[in-house]
Length: 165
Image (cartoon, rainbow, N blue to C red; front, side):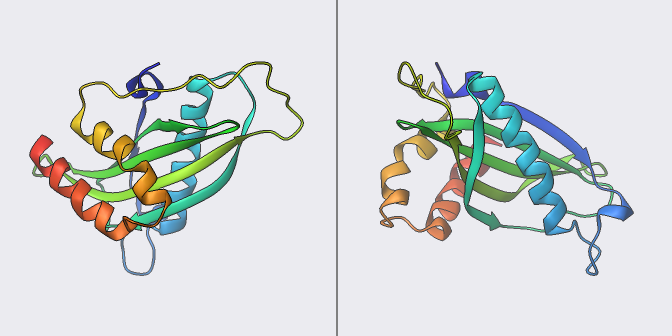
C-alpha cells in the first residue's frame, strides 16, 4: 500500500469562535481537528481497531487567522508490529490573496487496541514519487533515535514544501 493511499485531506474555516486571546486559531482547536483527521486516516488504512497512543510531536510554525482555511493532510508514514506512525501537515489558505503557507507539522503513534490479537502482520506502506513523503519516511529512524530534532526536521521539511508549492 502506498502512503498516499492512506491520505486524508480536510479543510476547516476559521471563525471568531475558534480564536484565542491573540485573535489567532486556538491551539486546542487545531489539536481537536488534527485528532479527527488522524482518526479518519487510520480508518482508511485498516479496519483493525486502533487508538491514539501519542502525539509524538507537534510543531506550531505559524499562526492561523480569522477567515483563513486550515488544511490538514494526514497519512500513514510508517508501520510497526502493532502500531503506525501518522504524519500530518497543516497549512493555512488565505482567501484574500489565494496563498498557502505551512503552519504546523505533527507525528503521532496509533496502536492496535490491547484486546485485539493480530492474525497477520500489519500491511506495510511504501512511498511513491512525492518528495515530501519520501523525506518523512526516510527520516523516521533519525527522528526516532533523536539524531534529527523535530525543529531541524521542520526546517528541512519547510524547504521541500516551498519547492513543491
